[in-house]
Amino acid sequence: MGRLINPDNAGKERTRLTKTVALAVRELAKQAAPGAESRELAAYIALSLDDIAGTIDVSVTAWEKRGYWVKADRFRMEWLWTGHLAGKMRAAVLDEDWGGVAALAAQAAQKLSKVNV
Image (tube, rainbow, N blue to C red; front, side, top):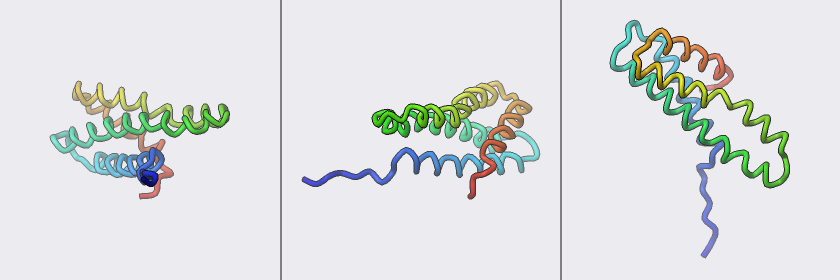
């Protein structure tokens, strides 16, 4: 039996999620008033950021096996904001704090400003 190759690795998943979060933030910014669509977009952003945070350790594992500890730590620090922002966004959505959602979406947009969609 041959090797099984998974074409969807953590890096591709993270890239896909960052692009969709950037699009969701743009759509959320276009909303005139908070409603059902705004709630769904904000919830999607929170869940996607949480998924992005989950891909970090998977990516870093290979580097740590080879002893690239500094590279692994830099990568973790570069993406640390996703977990924090996901928790804050989730709390803001559940509390229906739309001012907080807007501020957190702006932070996500700032972090993802280099993402080409």
